[in-house]
Image (cartoon, rainbow, N blue to C red; front, side):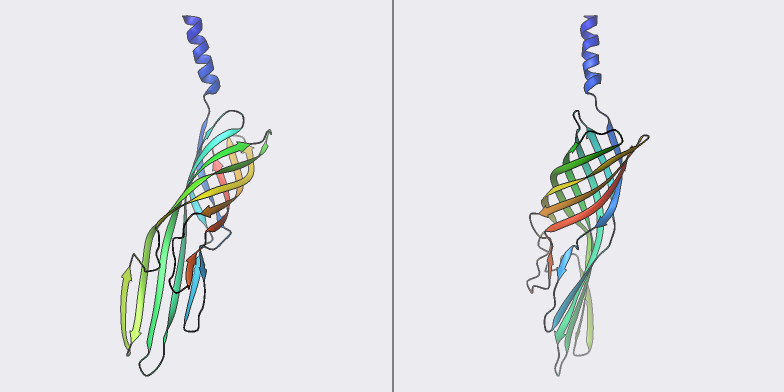
Length: 213
């Protein structure tokens, strides 16, 4: 009985894999939205050039792993326009929001001692948060201002997509530094403007650096 228990414990120890966690940050390589201009209306968009979050990974045998991230980014967009005449009508819309991204990835590390290239792929969910739109309208020299968390161009506040990427895993003592480029294809758009001024981009690229322990 004792040898059997020792054999079982040895096998469990051999297959017990370390669980790493840390922080991840970077910058978007693509804008969050497309903006357009017409004769009477125009739109603009700003994607803040930072991504911050946390990461965790279960390291499996043979260079395999499963990674889960929680990433946050912020963006804003605005549109304005109107019709002139005897009675002018002019409207501006200024919108700010954040997006939480939850990638779940399968990872493979190629052999190496200090630097190990890797590839990963999986799925991701994207959830909008803190969406606020301020609308100011001027009609007959009278200004009105309202705000909403559900603008008319909002199509979905949650979307899902396919992720793939690749990078390097650099081990420094007990720390792993992992620069990576990721590409995501979202299955649906967050925003679809009926006027064609603003639309979400379904192709997304990011440069990320993870630091795990």
